[in-house]
Image (tube, rainbow over the protein chains, first blue to last red):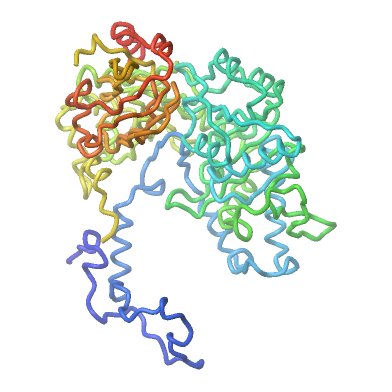
Length: 481
Length: 131
């Protein structure tokens, strides 16, 4: 049976006048477009859209989807991204008509179920973070960072303090300095040690009364918990600054340690990492933030409030930074996070973190014999191995290994991040993988590092597209058909 | 140019000092070590001629398939020339990093800033430590 729908574009498959659906005669009065629109908005040339039948469209996309690698089809140890398995019961919850069929302009009285769910989620996220107020508005983790920094800016403005700097460790996620710049601060880099921990000497040198916020990721991007977290918080607080906690790695400490208890003033969550929201695709996402009581009044509007048995969207917040998102954010993602938190409960969430850390340490103990792990023998939920030695001795890079893993049916780990580790491979197994899977992955890595370098340079060999010319793709991208 | 005659920053820029109109001018480029570490370069944004550079602050940026990195001005001063052809011939950076791969020239506003730069031996020792 001919099956080339996954290699041809919809435009190439198109045939004039082919249709998937035919509309019935219009049963409302029709007026010409020229009467309704200014002439500048009317064109006589129809849009160049592909014309196909329904089965052609379905086959095209279903075939493409079978060429995808996802957590539902492959082991996916992508460090920093916490590619945990997403329980399918989340989808049932999110598909409940009471959530799915709401209109964002419905009166509060008709969406009490949704509002109650959101209100309770605000409470859960605050409790898990050890903070007292929450905004579910931001549409992604980076949007949460930006929102929190705008909250910080409003707080200092209110106190008539003019602070211009945000300190950020050199191994932070790239979104941290971007958020700082977008919220009007200048980003200043703080050095870290080989294990990713903050260089306290450098921090002490750079902290002063001009520093608004110190943004940190704990556990850090090497998967190491910051033992000096209290000292760091004290140092920053003594100068009147705030601590921002990038919650990317919350999966390591759920139910065990709360950022607020160790001095964080603000944080964001990535529901797609920690609370099994959908991954990838560029959204829709969510990046809820939690803050201390003193910052709560600056959070964006609306927040969900409660009065007796009634839940409502509260806009009466005079100190608020205003809106950061239309309507109420991406509630579909939030329903899934709520379902995940409720189905696990406090003990279950703690177990999630314990198993994530156990899996990562089990894998580290095997992989350190194949590729060195500079940070040492212990980690939290992820660790960073290095192929630097292999690159020197056999000219095999982290990228070669990553590409070859695809041939063996594994998604690759994150490579070349953090930049502070040469030829970095950042591996995060997550709590949902079995011992057999971890063993198979470590065994495969051991096989790959012994393979012919020439074979590795041209991997992957089994995928529909082999290694793309990344340089050409970046220099001369073809962005449209 | 022989790298032994150049000065280097801790952030991997090289500097060649010359005299022009009674003042010092530096030619700035990116070290061979840095270019190799960045791997394949895909984009270079040159500074603007006439713009003011501040020592140890970013003054232009380079993008590789791995990451976007800032280049830091080795000294403060006005940018008086840039290597216009370079962004469209990025292979020049790796082929001839200390010659045709120069990036910009800066008229030095404070000669004492040159004292902070490393000689080639000291720079190589630093790279050794980093690798």
